[in-house]
Each structure stands twice: as structure tokens, then as C-alpha cells.
Image (cartoon, rainbow, N blue to C red; front, top):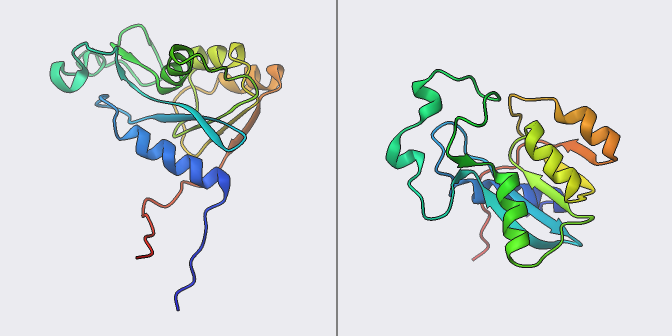
Length: 160
């Protein structure tokens, strides 16, 4: 009989963040985020245009057209980051993210990091790197635990 390995909690939620990222409408990065407290999903978010508006899959990427490097000039983009959307979704549903862990496919930009500090999360776990490291000192000062894990396997194990 084949040995079945069960993912630990962090791998489990990182894998869910990866699936959430599949909804992204960004042409550069597919980013997903899942806010969790006590092993319970509070909200999810992925990067893309504001709800109901045309997105980059339809219109093309202005940042690519202007040769803007990743991690800079965030204002030249119609997209909302996954971490911003996880905060917005929690807010829309009346859910506090205080003491939550956010699992994301990438490290946060400085703007998202500041929002996560004010949302009072306690932990941020990721496996991928975004082109902006300025969040590190901010998280350290705010007492937010930060951990980089291995990328979870993309396969899903079924036991039929």
C-alpha cells in the first residue's frame, strides 16, 4: 500500500493560496492570499482589477507597455494586490483579521505590509518572493512573524 503523507497546516494553507492565485487577472504575477485564524479561513484574495471593471487580461498591461519594473510604481496599475483584497474581503464580511496568519504566494510590497500591520495580523507565511523587500523591517518592528516555506507541491492526492 502507498504511504499517504498529510500536509502540515502551513503547507495546506499555502496550497490553498496557490489555488486562489489561479483567479488572478494579472499578466505578470498570479498572487493569492488566505487569512486564517485557529485553522479557520477568514477571507481570501487574489490580485486583479476592482470588481466589475475591465482587467488586464482584457485590456493588456499598462506596466508592460511602459516597461515599469516589478515592485515599483504601484500606482500605474489597475490591479489590487492579493493582500489588499484579503483585507477588503474580510472587511466586507465584517471579519477582523486581528491575530490572523496570512498565507500568500509572494512576499508583500511595502503598501500591503503597512495595511497588514494595521489589520493587526500576527504572522505572514509565504513561499515566493516579490521584488520589494522593504516589508522586512516593518514586520520586524510591528512584531509580525514572517516565515518563508518551501513551495507546496501542485498535485492533489485523491484517495478514491
